[in-house]
Image (cartoon, rainbow, N blue to C red; front, side, top):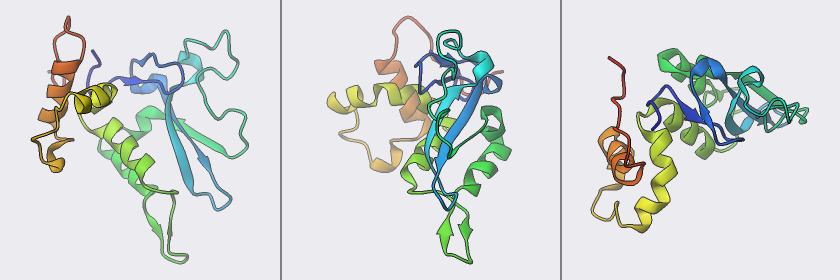
Length: 166
């Protein structure tokens, strides 16, 4: 069971990133410096595979057009402000700072929506099982829905934690 908004699944090794200060957000940039291919990974010092792989969990270490920042700088209200900078339009050229928005929307959900990071692991099982059949599309990503997915399809031995620790 992941602690909502405090733990994430590494996109490389698939193990838990235990805290924002143990992770990194990495991406690629095109020739116009527009971002794409967002990944949440363990930063090198926290990577469980750093001994066997010199790049640790980084996907794009060998790419000259890669960029990365500490994960915790993209958390909370200030983190949301930073993520939204990718969408900010360059009015002179009428372009955003991101290629396509689907990856960025997924990143926002993973970082900002309680229970989404874990619920996404069970999304296909819930869809196949008919979980969403009588639900309005606008409710798919609400906290109560995401929590229900985790409770229904997640490990049965753990208790779903609250979104914000007391």
